Amino acid sequence: MTDNTSTKCGVVAVIGAPNAGKSTLVNQLVGQKVAITSAKAQTTRARMLGIALAKSAEAETQIILVDTPGIFAPKRRLDRAMVSAAWEGAAEADAVLLLVDPIKQRRHELEPLLEALAKRPERKLLVLNKVDKAKKEPLLALAQELTGKVAFDEVFFISAYTGDGVPELKARLASLMPEGEWHYPEDQVSDASERLLAAEITREQLYKQLHEELPYDSAVRPESYTQRKDGSVEVRQQIVIGRESQRPIVLGKGGSMIKSIGEAARKELSAVLGVKVHLFLHVKVDEKWADDKEIYEEIGLDFGR
Image (cartoon, rainbow, N blue to C red; front, top):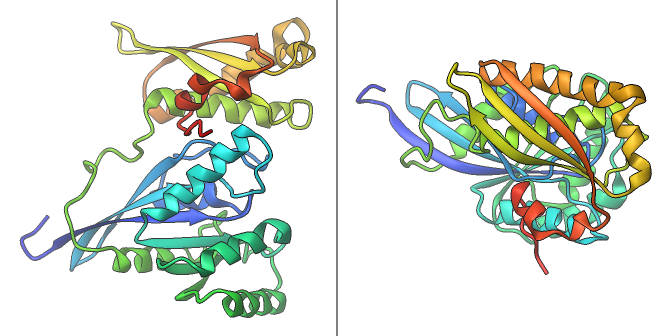
C-alpha cells in the first residue's frame, strides 16, 4: 500500500427473496467460493461473510458482505432465526443491496421486503439479476415499478452467474464505503470458520444430490476438525435428519448415497483449503433438532425465543 492511498472499510447487506442469486453474487464479488449456492431455496443459513477487496489509485477498500439468509415468511423457529439474522445483518450496514430475480420475482416475498426497506435509513441499491436470461422491456418496467415503491439510490443490471455488470457494481460499492482501517487481514477472505465452511459444503452436496427426496429439515453438524501431523485435515460431521424414514434416503443402497455425498464434499473442501481432507459422515435422527439451541449456534444462527 503506497502512502498516497487511503484505506476504506464498510459493510454491505445483501438482501432478497430466496433463490434470487445472493450467494452467487457474493462469490462473484469476492472472487472465490464463500457461500453455498444450492438450487434449493433458503439454503444460506449462517450469516456468511464474504470479504471483497477493491483496489484503485485512490483507495484500497474492504467491502464486508453480509450474505443474509433469504427473507421469507417465518413459520417455525428455524425460519424465524434465519429472518432475524437477515435483518440483523442489514441493521449494521453502510449500504443495503436488494437483489431481485426478474424472472421468478417471488412477489409474495418481495413485497414485504420492499415495505420494510422503504422505512430504512441506509443507502439502498436495487440490483436486478439474470440479465443474461431476462428480456429487456419487462426488466426496465420492473426497475421502474420497484424504484416507484422504494427510494433506491441506484439501479444495477447484472448477471451473478456470468459476472456481467458485477465489476461496475463492485466499484460503486467500494466508492460508498467510509474511510477506515480494514477489519480483516488481506488473506482472510471469509470469517466463517473452516469447520462451518466444511459443514456448509457437505450440506450443499446433500441438497444437490438428494434434490426433492430430502426436505429442507436437515442439518450438518460439525463434530470435530483436526489437523493431522502430515498437514492433512480430518473432519467428522453428523447429518441430522428429522425422521427415521429419511435415513435410507441419505444412506442410499449399500451406503452408496452417503459415500457419493462425502466424496464430492471432500474433493471440494480439499480444493478450497488446499490440503488433503479425510471426511467422515454419519447420520443421526433427531425429531426435535429444529428446536435444539446448540445446533443453531453451530450453524451461526441466533436461537431466538
